[in-house]
Each structure stands twice: as structure tokens, then as C-alpha cells.
Length: 63
Image (cartoon, rainbow, N blue to C red):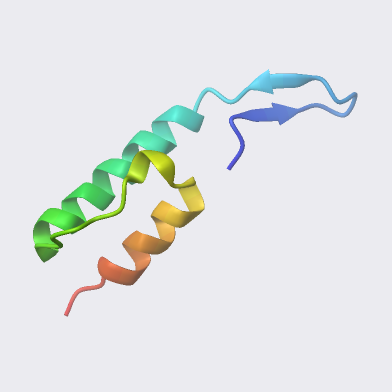
């Protein structure tokens, strides 16, 4: 997920929702870690948004 989006002429503009989406993904991942009692979670700050999403999808399933 890019922090910028481009127009047809290739000009880049900042994506105002980029940081909000990332913050929300990290918060959800931290809730999953706490709820599951995962002892050695990855450093979410170093992961891409897609990697964080896959972590949530893998460990956030109800059992």
C-alpha cells in the first residue's frame, strides 16, 4: 500500500489515509498478540501493511 497516489500525468500526491490505515493495522495486530498471548511477536514497525494484514489473518481467526 503506497503512501502516495499518482495522477494520469504521473504527479505524486500524498495519500492522507495511508498513515491512518497503517496505524489501525498495527493496533489490531497488537490486540491479536495480546489476545493470543503470543510471546515473541514480530516488530510491526518493520513490516509492510500487507505483511501485517497477513499476520492478522493468520492469528486473528476465532477458534
